[in-house]
Length: 317
Image (cartoon, rainbow, N blue to C red):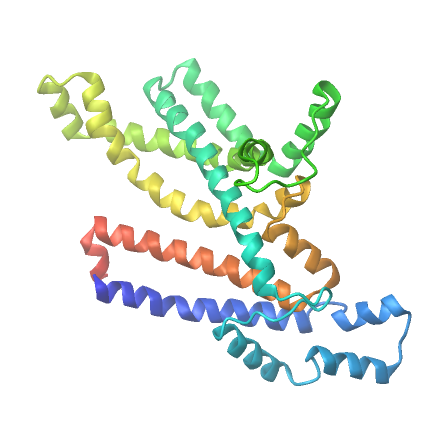
């Protein structure tokens, strides 16, 4: 098992390096403007000497490979650089913002599970009857409607009909728990709707497949109660594939907070990233993308390891 874990960790390194190269080179070569152009535009200057001075000051005067190696070396020492616009250390900014994004992603996942698991189970029990058709249609609807559009509708009609608006000032959990949870409730519910649609159909399908297995029929034949067969034998086995999907959904939810943090004014990584993209703040963009990539890679490794633990044959293929 240790050998398999080491293999997965080593195989993830090229992926991580590839992502850093893609983001780093893409920012410098494939955009129509650079951060130096934006700074010069703010001053209304096109002086070549001023451009050269700014590039030297920002560390952009050397070759791209040299810049990349310098950045990677600093990252390995825990230094993510300083924001080109605010001058604050990116590491300190992310330390305050990562918990907000992770918490919002976790709340979104909890909302998705609270909606999907009981709904999928109920649809499986009522297979091919009107509750099943209605719930499947609702699952497809929430899966296909853009969640940011739902957020805009909630804010618009919440204000028009109930006079509700999202809180403008963020409160930490330890400062005011009730206010904090009220701030997180609406974005967490909306961000959890999209994965809930797919999970409802997955739970229903897995539940129906397990209920048709021979060991479930044997359990019924032995005289076990329907509830015992359902909860002790069918439910646990049907949720194994769901656990895999959950492992991959969480980092995607955290990465998907970019839009919701801006709509609901939450001070997380997504809001930090969008503000950096507008002004091409290279160190911030690179660092946030690296964090998102690390989260996704760690989630994939954990899912692979959990599969290997459940099915030892995977370790040898």
